[in-house]
Length: 321
Length: 250
Image 1: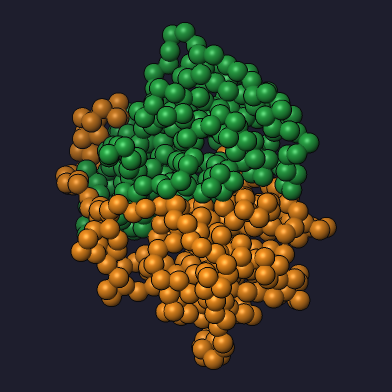
Image 2: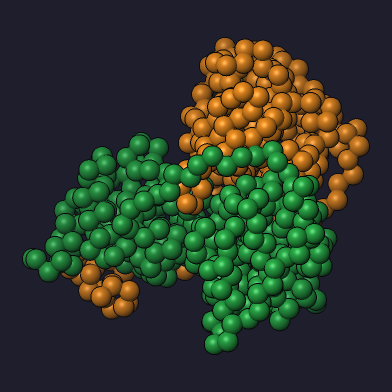
């Protein structure tokens, strides 16, 4: 089975989750090509070549990831390659661009796949629905099939000692003159900060409704995150209240995370929040309400006031008791 | 100017779901439905455009649902939509076919803007807007947190994993609403009563000339329950000890 794996990057490096799509592809087939598109891709192509043979579309007209253009090129390359399966890791980039490419390729698409199985020659895909309350098993009808996988569900393949080949897409494979031109990139206000990204961190410290304002959140959730070298996350309630920025929101409609450790501070555990973190390896919760639903999804629970308990944790971690 | 707002009828996410006897779907018995929350945000945005910059705008809500789906279109009418269209259809739909049905309506209505939710909270696919844009060859601005009309196009702020991205698109365009675009209004009692009297236009996939071609076959479903057993600890110190035992904390 010919599989085209789309590698996402941020303009300077591959995004770490991209390896999950390759891991999924590797489990299904030996015939895999990693596809990188954009401009000035040398470093990203070299990085990808450690994992699989690489195809590159490197062109000034692809400088910014605008959906109309990038989806067009992905669809053209998928056709030229006779790809039966097109795979990417589920991120906002993939949701925007890969879904549009799927719309150009017949719409046989499954998002956020977390498991698969071959049954009588058919590819069964498992994906969450209803905020993760249900796992559905589906089969896609039609070809090619387009699949995005959750980064936490598949491991990246190990890097090869000798790099694979890197090949450039023939420029006549996509005619620059015919590229769509309905969308212009204007700017990207990159999140800056010393803490790791919530979707990529090993440990996530997340705060909920118990925190009354931004200063308290920063002092307790931020303070504990820094003591642990962790990322910060937040429940939707705090984002809606303007206490935390929306880039921190973990849940069905925000970020889906699955770190080694998820620390839920003053988060009650609404279904929509659980959908974003319940696949974390270890979950610990501190909440004043002993009946909070978060405890049903936690491995360790401490019933208490976060304003009292969190400073104790920070002090102990920093060794100044 | 016409603004088309696709409105999906979804099971209320705040209820306990049960599977049907065959475990290939949700048990419809006693299920309550609502207008997909992201589509409500799209309706609100369309109304704000009409109320602020484009008083001539006509806001048209469209739903694909069984006859009972009228109720959710009435929610859009009560909020202030000018017209509502129900594409009556029983049985499952997938994003590809929803996009094809919407494309057929768009061909007929010729809207300048299609505003819709970024995802529906039942299947969580996040595909329909992008499929529709691809089918029509229109620009798309997904995950919008701010929309502005400029010259003869749009400037849209988008919520991405890397940060807030700003793009410009030509019109007509498809915009999908993210959570922070606005806070939808509650319909007042008089407008709810008025909406009950409004007529809802009806059509069917056959009348639109669309033969459904399924892309997703459902094999089965399972309810997910927590497999974890919570060990309660007494102090912050105890908690840290436990976390160190798991070796994720040094």
